Amino acid sequence: MTRNAITRATRHTRIAVLLPALAACASAPRSVPGPAPEQVPIRSTRAPAVAPPAAEEFDPASATLDDYVRYALGHDPGLLAELERADAARERVGSAAQPPDPKLMVTEFVEQIQTRTGPNRRRVELTQPWPWFGTLDAREALADRTASWTESSARARAARTVERVERAYHEYAFGAVVARLLEEKVVLLENLASVVQWRVEAGAPQEDWLRLEIEVAELEARAQAAREQLVSQRIALSAAVGWWGEIPPPEAVEPAAMELDHAALEAMAMDRSPALRTAAAGLERARAQGHLADFAGRPDLAFSLVWLDVGDALDPAQPGSGDDPIGLGVSIGLPLWRGSYSAQRRAAEHEIRAARYAIDDRRAELSTELADILYRLESAGRDLELARDQLLPRAREAYDLGLASYQSGEGSLLDLFESERRVLGYEVDRWRAARDVHIQRARLQALTGSDQP
Image (cartoon, rainbow, N blue to C red; front, side, top):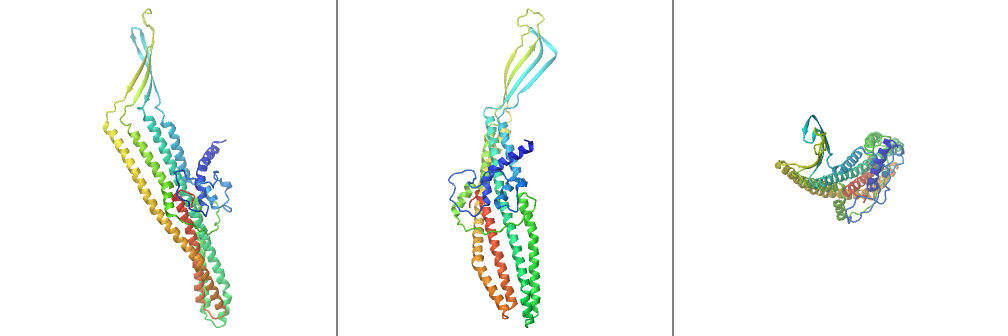
């Protein structure tokens, strides 16, 4: 297996860990459960833990929203950067608990020192530095908490990636619907030309023909603008997914009705929010930094082994002639600069307090954002029901009656145009509300850290 293949396999393994948590976020509709009874990693039992599709396996023409999400989780550069940082932090855990490398010093005497037992020819010293007892464990704990913090940050980035894909997906689908509706209205008015011509020939004002041409021109301009906007919406989806090939507009679908339990959703957000969990991991990291700072000012130790290479004495009969002495030594550092050590501990205390404030701030932001999401979600749901079930059917009925009246020679063209504009407006409102419901649900899923609702 080549090095690139190994890298891709490792990356896919990391992404597969995120897929059960996040790939199913795109599926709809869903129900709202009660708050989670325990703090567990975000996970779903519905999405398989599979590697994201490769570029040659991804087909936007037949891809579902789940497929777009899976592909994005494996190809979003920002997410991949977060994962690489998390891997790097996890690799540092093993090395953090290792003591410093030993030092070997060899001294060759240029002028040998004569002693009673012989000349000293060379001196070899092996020294092993060793931090104060418990320091290595504290360093390992800090590295582990840092790795957990970066991993939590990667999960939060993955949740944002899913939300970004869903938002771009539904914006693109809505734009395609608007363009189609406008094009259909242009065709509808063009087909009305024969009726207008007959009315004008029968004595209706010549202005009716001009009004028809103006109405058609305005709708054609709006349809052209909608088609041009599809280009930017397609690019937004491509950027969110990480796919730069051609992406056809997805089909717009109406969201199913759902019930919202505000208390349950708030509890879920406070328990599972990826951003809040990242802040909590930051607090654990700050505490580990504080624990390590407690060892500031503790003396470092060093254990040494010394060997002297001694030659033969001038008098071979001298007792101990040529014997090589061996010595054991222990050295201890002198932490004299107490001010710097106290500053390190105070800095660690500030970091802990800052992390606690960050959690409180994130909780306040969660409450505010959740309230905004629920308001927008319920408002969009009401707008969808109003446009679909009441306004649009009545507007269509009014248009049909107006068309029949105009064809019979009684109604006015201006009234018919007004009815047609209402039908178009309510149709756009219907699909805009459907888009808003999808987008707010995506925000809600990212906020609560779950594939539900």
